[in-house]
Length: 437
Image 1: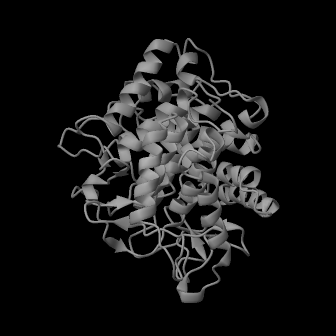
Image 2: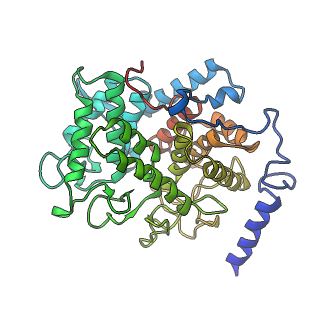
Image 3: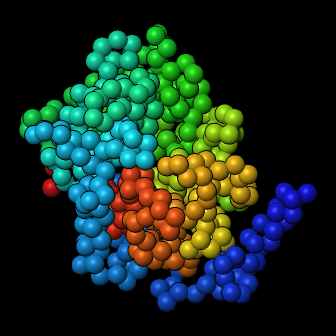
């Protein structure tokens, strides 16, 4: 009965009211939410064709000097400040640590490398890659060239030998970008390192319980590249823009397969995202149907925060699925706005109801208005078509990487997604083409 009542309320919200507003809002939460800047107007062509990137902060009225300062501060907080998650080791290495979980993860190392190559910080990139190669990458055996997804930072001891497929996806893209930006004769042959991962990936056929990162039949990224995770996936791992990069720069003879993976990822996201709320579950079958593992994977939680940002990136870079992506951006921003622009929660069932069980983080088990989701939902404004898209940009601008009122603080996941969000909205998350300075 409660679910039926909520379904009615949700339908009512999207037909005429927005929670958190002082009066009813007709239509799609925009007709009464006017803004001096007018409706958000997304660009028609992607950066791959134009070579240009939107500075949405500038369009929103913030000064370039303030935008530059915000990006510099975000980088400082995550990589250099007293609450940093990046730590240098000796003269040549460094790692990113998930402080709340007391480990270093392929997610964090690969995100750190992406930040470094985007912002032209070669020393940081090289330190991260050297540490990753020494402490995470398997040298020989069935897992050769893959990465242990969780490592003890101080000792390099593997907490798990297995891989999380998004780590390999990011590492290859990071290295291809580094090859384009800095060449391959300055101490690290980035292209050769990327090809080593890719070539090893294609040699894995289930022997020793290790598979390809990509399911070859479905042309989709796997949850984990082993016999357990080969036949299902995580929607936040679907980055069609990265597969387009592989098709262009990997040069391993599999260009069409990678382009097919990009197209399939776009179609998959259509199926995985709820037709009203835009929300997805953390884990799904390749069909987009939720994959339930007890209480894990059955709802929109921490992994899922990345999906709006990933779709926005694909729109910004390639704009090959404009109609659906704009509609998706409208749906998910409308839903979150209906919960209150400064209050929306960070975990939901896909239909927009609140979950009865909350996935804990850092010892806290509670819903909160999380900086990570604030950041990724704001990045969705790259494809926004509404007045309220500006509200998400403003919310992002005013957000701070600092402890919550109850003391919980996550400079790792919140911090990295916040930094990515600032980069996206300032036009500093780009396709790194050969010879870029």
